[in-house]
Length: 388
Image (cartoon, rainbow, N blue to C red):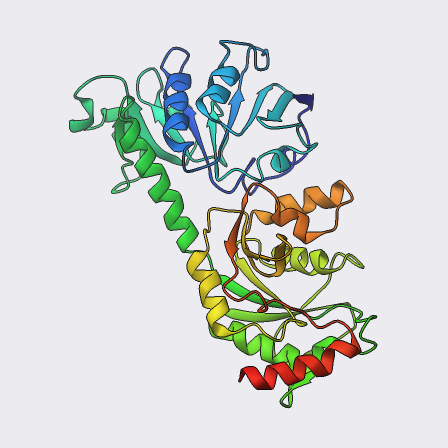
């Protein structure tokens, strides 16, 4: 486990999640049953979802000692844990050492459950009715909890009913209704996932040093590869963008450009620049040197996509390696890629080897063969014509 001062990504940050795009806090006074409920929720969710856990402890803490809350949640199946008190924190992964940044710690998690933080205005919360007055709670009460049998079928207490927006009363659960709470939580986050836009990105910012000329402009039956890749993405994405180096220019395509903000970092710089340009979108990335990608291949990728994961990509059956340049990169892959850069790792393929990525079987072993050298170009053009 690692520890430190709690500062990065918190002070002065008035918007955005604390740790993860899909996070929910369980709030209530001491003895209300927060830890027990969270332990049971993690046990129910862990077989299908990677769940992180964060505890806010105003009394100081001991990290991961047997019987303590973090130990209980790790035993329940949480894949990443963190505990805080004041500005001190400690955290770690269940399978290895903790990264330096809190968000990187939870990058592989599908969702994060928090204990405490009832005064944090950025968090959606499940709040225990008993012992908590609504005036103590900030906005963003997503659901209410009770430990009293039969109350879920009754009207809310008058103080709570008066404090909540008219017509927007949140659901009320008994604390033992773990199945109902888990289903509600997954439905809530799944609806948010479905609402995200899917944008296309053609990576065309490489120097093409091995080819000796711009690979993006190589033609197959008279159509530049960058244009062909953009047309493929148009059929399945809301918008299509061209990734280019600063000053490179692709205006002739009539599509929006995303210039690299991460200079001289290869494909990962282009992917990260897109994720920075629209952090709420998922990006279907396609390299400009993959002439054998077909609409059917992209259909298979999207059919197998799991938007809960960091990314979805194909695995090459020959090499066993994932292909990062024909992949869907979800918004939370940004934290993972930034963490890799901090560790001086620029390889997007390594990010796809991460536990949070989903790798699919490649339908056609030759579909993702790229063309990087002049001697490969004519053979590729001949095969391209034969395949059609």
